[in-house]
Length: 117
Image 1: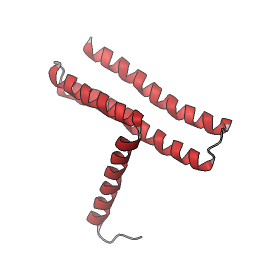
Image 2: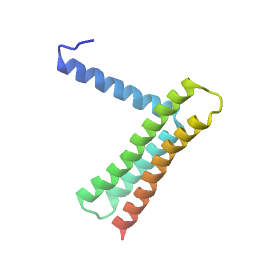
Image 3: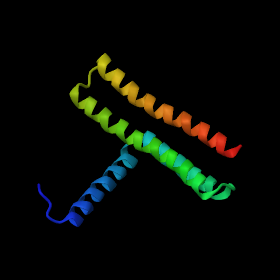
Image 4: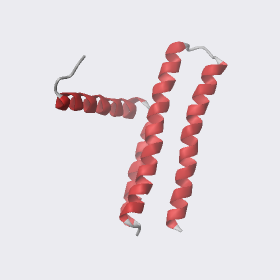
């Protein structure tokens, strides 16, 4: 479909993104946990004495975790469409996606520890 109106295209793309976020919040438990952590971190950032850019950086780092979780969930769904039975290749792919989130969570812990010292 060719969009002649770039504002219409922007609106549609935004609507699809919001739909994806709502779906993740309704159906993806890990994403819900990460959203709750994000809300708690934002509250903490409001009360701790850090510069604005440091606060934005720390909040943004957790947003990266949430974005990776969305990618993880989407790819896992695609993997499940390929074959729902156990396949070592699919398990390895899912595990690697999970590892990417784990790495970012660990990095977030380091960044928060460094910022609060």
